Picture 1: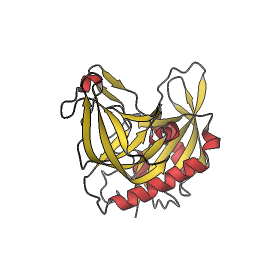
Picture 2: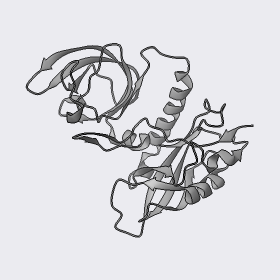
Picture 3: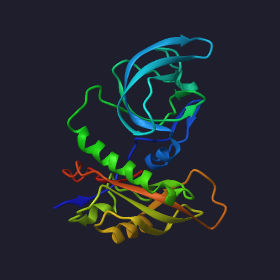
Picture 4: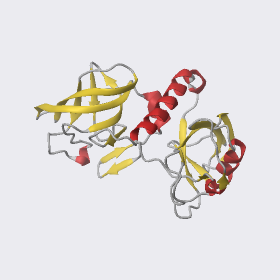
Length: 254
């Protein structure tokens, strides 16, 4: 019997380190905002510019989900000596990243605040399923982006967490037809979810999931709500590889 629970996916998160303050984006919002998304491998770092505190890194794209591949990124910091308070980053040859990049002029810049996830240096068999689902997710967002242009993606958190569990855990025999769902939510000034309607559902327990969102979750909103209610999109992902233990979440918002 499959059970359903929730954990917060920390791929793209809010980072605050001293003077460095980064605003987190959900995976789906980062997709909309980025020019290039892919899995890169760092080939070499070089070309330190001491005055600008920048250096170059040659990269190889293993997979590209959006945009076109290129060969070099500009990195904020000093090689081997980053200042995290200034949002600098230290990247090294052979490292691999799932990364979301914006173009500035003719270059792509990477800092501590760049949306990214560091991967293992070697391709793991366990990665295959994750990246297959990621490809399906991005393909859907790209094909339907005109539907989402007027709305921002939010994420959510459990109002009163009990360990790592939520009411999602109580749903048994969950058999999703696809690994993700997108809900349109209405949120009040207290960030409470008043309505949750699936635009595209899992194809299993979609109405119950909407009810749980309204009763046990709040939305993370990175702006002040002037009106009584406002609409957002909420992206939910199903991790079918994380179903073994009762403390392991298999549904998360992103």
